[in-house]
Length: 584
Ligand SMILES: [Zn+2]
Image (cartoon, rainbow, N blue to C red; front, top):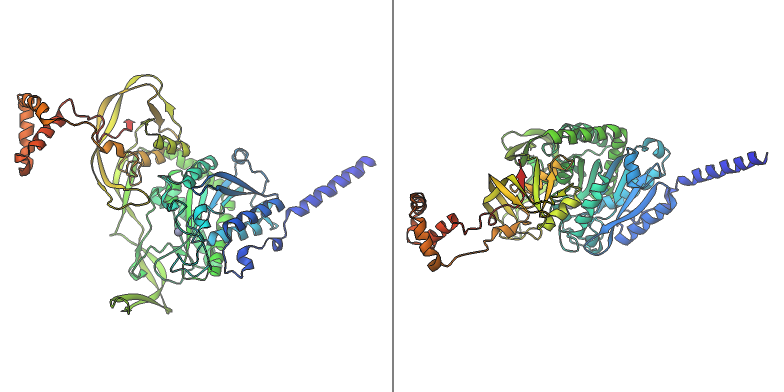
């Protein structure tokens, strides 16, 4: 009898714990709600709020990961109906992981506030433990912490609220949504490690747009299907794009792909945004995840924008929960397909001759003479809404192709590159013995370099490299062997092939090779050059060189330098030689 009484007490205790699991949402109002939807949550308010939710709800855990450039840590809120917050166990349990990244541009804070309301309502709902049992949410409340601390009233010139917000640049004035491959910021470095350890299936990043005026509150962007490995290319449209549009419309909040229009009106159509890997959705595509991004419209009131972002999160979360197994299967198939893929496209251009049609609602655009510039100025009449099919340039044409090697050899001397490969979860092995290998070796033949800095770099572009097979002596402990028989294959090709638009070469990580180190004194080299011309082949080559440009005829240095480059003195294994070799 005593034992049965204690069993009853235990049961009562369990029931009580069960009751306390569902938090009372009214006790967790957000600064946004308390300000009548006029203010966004500050960094300190936000972290404190999430900590209080963590304390109250057994489904919520706040963890720190890595540092940011401002010295403060990054936080992630893990939401799991199974009350388990260990990533190894979460992976073992086969959960589908959705990562929501907020305040990458802290002047665009809609997702910061929407995420708080979303998670609070989700974990206090009756269906949470049943409907979301296969999903784990990872919420980064503030990714750009330094920018979030730089609160100001006015740096978003065209934005309708909130009353104050953070700044776009981080503590180093970097735009973190251009930093996913080069990873200059500590934020990105921490993120890459975090991302590759968690390996999320779905990624959502929240923004507020600039650009044209139109009636939609929320526009969205997906990783370009051409950047995704099949079957993710079709699946991102069928699993996410179409159902999200349908559900949002049914809820009275019609959405449209990101309106990529600046300085003109959308009447004559626009291009689908092409997200190279420097952008989040381009980056997540390399890791075979579904990448999505929301852009609420800057001129819509903050309250309306947060509501729309929240609605999008709710619909996305429920789609992920309903398709959790399918999402993982599709990703596994994509990884499998990437192992067998040999032809890769490194860069694309928008196909301007073959647009699709997009049913679009717009405001009538008109021009008036500006009082300031006395030139035509574009305006929109919001009382005059049109709807028509416009040209949507959503197709891409390949511009640079490559074939995958079996492996790369990456010299350890380029430690910044090795770091980035490590942060991206790349497996590599130091070759510890002296050896000789036949390798494909690139010479940089041509490139252009920006005159002005972009995100702290003078990038290269239009890079052209020629490749020849060379027998290369490898000293032990000098090179990492990076096999492409791994999940990161696509990522590796895009960052290590020098012609790729976001390759480490084009982001200046290999600029050391662009400078010749040794030279010659003309008066010393002259006799040797003269001896070289005894060889008819050398003589013919010099004659052809002089004939190629009349100015060379009277240029003594140009002639000697031409012969010097053909002599054994010239550092042809170094200068302009890309130091990452291919094992074909
Ligand atoms: Zn943004």
